[in-house]
Length: 140
Image 1 (cartoon, rainbow, N blue to C red):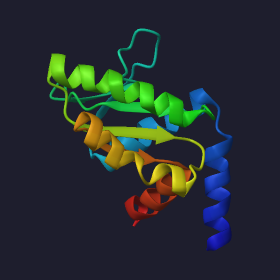
Image 2: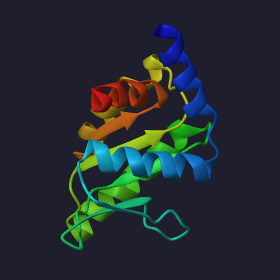
Image 3: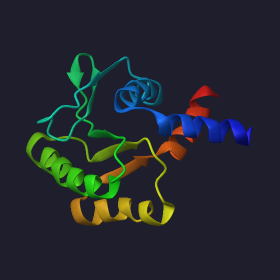
Image 4: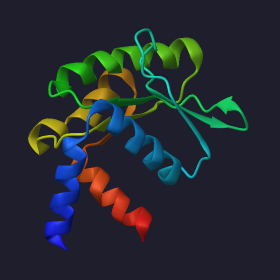
């Protein structure tokens, strides 16, 4: 079973941006048990790559997706954007960050505390390892 997990993780890491977007859209539908998920990842998206709609209304949940390797700098910039959305437009303070690669534990573990201490944002990071683990839970 360990080989299957590693293979699945490698598969996620190999996805292109477009493929990762489609994978995460399906994942979000199952993870949040929602019907409508819209990809909005464009320049000027205000820091929101995905919208979850419930009863045709935006759930205002900040979600970012990336396949970039320079994830830590991106995340720092995204936290400032999300803070602005929370303060100006009443977005939830739960921020979901989906990353197609495997993040180094020593670098990733302090980030939720930093997000909370600096911005009062509840950061949840889903890297390829976490995605594999969550998918196993979803699949039962």
